[in-house]
Amino acid sequence: MAKKFVILNGSPRANGNTKALIQAFMKGAEAAGNETICFDLQKMNIHGCLGCTKGGKNPDSPCVQKDDMEKIYPAYQAADAVVLASPMYYWGISGQLKCAFDRLFAVAEIDPHYENPKKDCVLLMAAEGDTESNFAPVKAFYEGLVSHLGWNNSGIVYAGGNMETGDIYNHPEQLEQAEQLGLSI
Ligand SMILES: Cc1cc2nc3c(=O)[nH]c(=O)nc-3n(C[C@H](O)[C@H](O)[C@H](O)COP(=O)(O)O)c2cc1C
Image 1 (tube, rainbow, N blue to C red):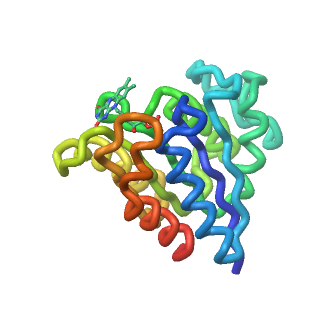
Image 2 (cartoon, protein in one colour; image 1 turned 135 degrees about the vertical axis):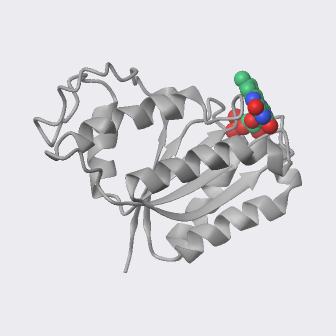
């Protein structure tokens, strides 16, 4: 059955390595008959969570802050799978992605028990470092996040060895891995 993928692109580089991973993933996912929508967070007006815990009253517009998250909420609510796509920044995800992800709490607030909607999840990450220890902090964060949300980890692409925009094209196997992951879910 066709699935809906919502992709959150945390890279500030319009044509960066993360975007290349996303494009490969989308190619695979769409070839398998799925629907994809990608939000380039850097181009969007998204403020940090206020921690007010006053959200969830209107399921169509769950956050008290009215900014470009309004475009993401309906896609997220309808999605079967969430793709977290980010460059590694200081052994974590980028601020743009963390900022948007925190705001998804407003959707959990719709439920009286703060239950998050259940999703499949994918991580696509570009980084300069290419060792297991370089990716270890992100792996711990992502696996902890998915486990605590009760989500299903559908796969991870760690694309190390990429510093400058376009370096990833020297690693076609990484783009192939992203495409195959999209195809397989
Ligand atoms: C602010 C900043 C922090 C970074 N931190 C790390 C890091 O902790 N580990 C790493 O391997 N690469 C790090 N990098 C390198 C990026 O992850 C790498 O350039 C990546 O390919 C960028 O992806 P993009 O082209 O999609 O933006 C950092 C880059 C920047 C600009």
